[in-house]
Amino acid sequence: IDNVDELKSFRKESAVGNTVTEPVILERRGAVLWITINREERRNALNEKVAEGIHAGLEQAEADRAIRAVVLTGAGNKAFCAGGDLQLQADGTPFTIDAADPRHYVARLLRRMDSCRLPIIARVNGHALAGGFGLVCACDLVVAREDALLGVSEVKVGIFPMMILPYLLRILPYRRMMELCVTGEPIAARDGAAENIINYAVPAAELDQKLDWLLGRITDKSPTGIRLGKQALAKIREMTTDSALEYAQFMLANMARTKDAREGFTAFNEKRSPNWTAE
Image (cartoon, rainbow, N blue to C red; front, side):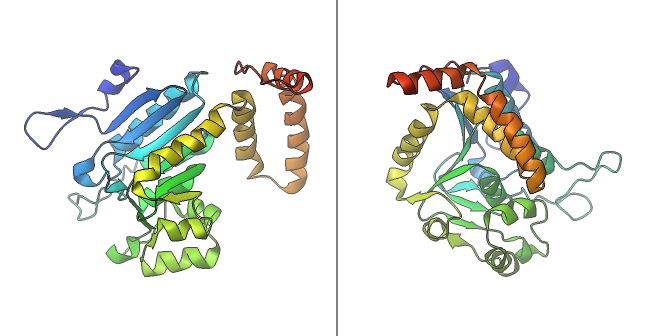
């Protein structure tokens, strides 16, 4: 973990003895920052502290130009994230609503994932259900163990996957999304890959090998090109076609003036590998 002081605010007491654990672990591995949801005893369920920890990890990654990608995963080998932590509050629901500030922590996290200019790769090491599947859909790329279950089970407890619907709509065809939402029945990652819902589904023993292969194809490319490209894509997604074309030509002209782009053009003409500076 690079910044221990930053992580202290995300520490909590474990349910077992006095062991101190972190709900989210940040770990730099070369040019990649790993963000691990560390609540294995709760199947890596999502709560406000977890959301804050992931948010902090994205901030840390973007602040370091040497970081080229982010991996989001869960601790252990059973669950990537089983969704929201459904521990009941005094009113009989698992939701705490502040009337003076009704912004939901899941919405804040998803917006931050949207604005992240680094590629976010979901390493789905186990089941990704409900809000956990929403996190998967909010990531840019997905590598999963083939037997992991993906789905939205909210209808089984009398609600609907409201907070993650925008991300389900981005990734899934409408009728497939509706079937998952109204039946609450999950699909295996191997089927999700066949339907282009995720990128790759592999046997559990090959998960990290496939992930490393994918990361290798990302981290050797222009970090500036990827960062500015993701920034542009987030805006273009919300534009009309005419507005998007106008914005795109402006961005392309500016990207061509970056040091990375000039190095890329020169390396191409000199028939050599580029030396990226992230500038």
